[in-house]
Length: 72
Image 1 (tube, rainbow, N blue to C red):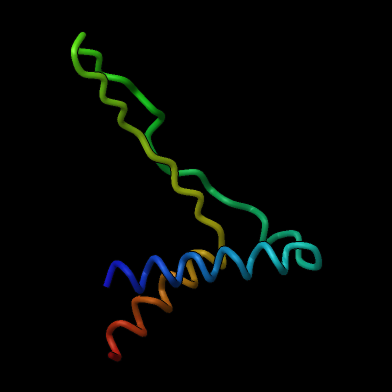
Image 2 (cartoon, rainbow, N blue to C red; image 1 turned 135 degrees about the vertical axis):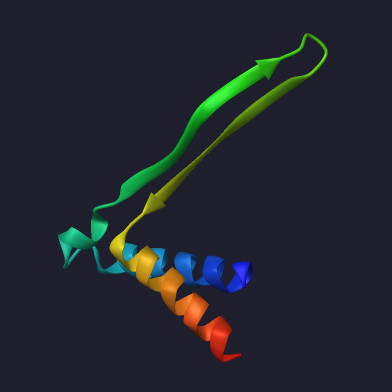
């Protein structure tokens, strides 16, 4: 399921980038996530964080990926 949602999101993102020249509103995205923060234990450094850019066609692609998964 996660693979289909990921593929749908990537496809939607690519289509949104391709069409953003003629439809500029497709380029609008919302950034969701956590800024990177580091845990330093002297012998081990761990960095946590992620950012997710959600655009209209990315969201649509993720939804379609889920629908395709449910039909399989």
